[in-house]
Image (cartoon, rainbow, N blue to C red; front, side, top):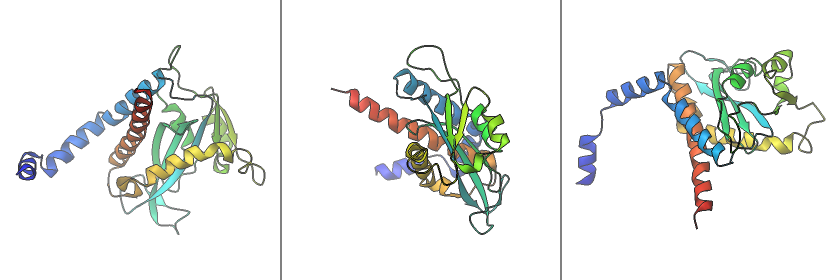
Length: 220
């Protein structure tokens, strides 16, 4: 009885798609992500001492912002760029074609970090240090991080698990969480704005789960 009533009052597929499109155009998911970051920052759960940058390729059959994936035999795909604070919570997320160099997606990624309310003091949006992979060791990378952030990229044969690798595991874990989402594991959407919206929802969910863990620790 309850399931039948739920199915009867649930919105139709076209209505759900239309609402999702309207909310994505209004950047509802980005605003939700920012509110969660504000709450985490106000509770002192964001560590701004350093950030980490990474990207992951997702296969996509069609749509805008797609390109041949260099690591998947040239099959069409899209790329998710991600920047996190020290513990791995996503601060900003962007998408591009799979054949876009990481350095080209870095500047919009850094600019996309919202001004977040900290535990004390004024809002902030730029960690002092950023750690990236060797793929971002270009002049473009340095220019993208020039907005108050000092970039540090791993060096071949030097920066291994004993150096930057021991700090970058947090962003790699977050990338694995994103890749585990059904809507992000493979891109099904034609419109890049919809794929970007699902990436924003995933980032908001990661922050929400961290906020729930924080609330559970504070409960008597």
